[in-house]
Structures are given as structure tokens and as C-alpha cells.
Length: 149
Image 1 (cartoon, rainbow, N blue to C red):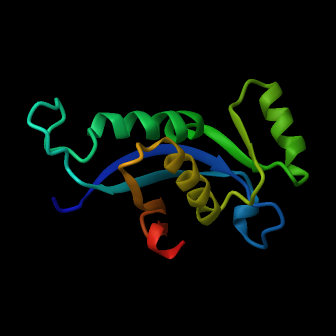
Image 2 (cartoon, rainbow, N blue to C red):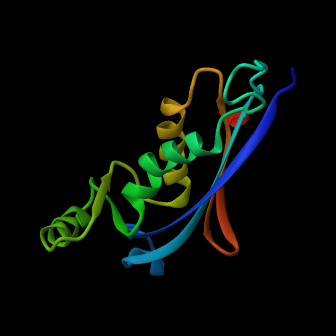
């Protein structure tokens, strides 16, 4: 049977600041992110299987992405834990805000690499992550493709 790619899209609101950046994004700000997740596999070819004809149930893919990315990142603020922003992160956290500390500059490019790693660990062995698109604004996005790795 032939391989098929399927894609599921997600949206979430996340704040961040880019420490050391020479433009406006050094300030804490947020984005309405749109994440498109594309996986590839062979549709199940077992008439007795409840998911016959599916590469992966969209609901199963949704569960993975919601748990790994949407729920933790939605309405949270992301800071690089290796910068002085860690002090701001602590202040916000102490005041009840959701904060995520990462070990990278929280650009779309670095976030998408992180997301790819998280997703790949959760996919069944017969399903591969094909590519991701993380849209930061209407006109700007980062892409991750397995073929480029």
C-alpha cells in the first residue's frame, strides 16, 4: 500500500521575549501561533481493525499535540533560562503566570525544532513526522522537514 501524508492544524497564544535581540522582539510580546503537523504512513489495511483505512486517527494525533505543545504553551510566556530573563520569569511565575523556561532562544525556528523532538517521541513506530509549519504571524512562519535533518 502507498504512503499517505495527513495534516492537523492547531492554534495557541504564546508570549515570549528574545534576550539580546536588537529589535522590538526583545520586549515581552505575544503571537497567535498556528501549527500544522504533517505525518506520513501507510493506511491500516486490516478490515477487522477499527481504524481501517487510517494512517493515524486525527483524534490520536490531536491528543499528542495538545498534550505536548498546545496545553503547555497556550497563554504561557517562554523565556530562555540561560539569560537574565530568568529573573522576569520567576517574578511572573510567583504572580501566578504560566511560564516555560527553555534552553534556547525562543524564536519560531528554535521552537519548531523543540516541537519536532517532542512529537517524534510520541508517534507510533509506523508513523513518521514529515514536516511542521509554525506560523508566527499572517506573513511569517518557520518550517521543519524530516528530509532536511
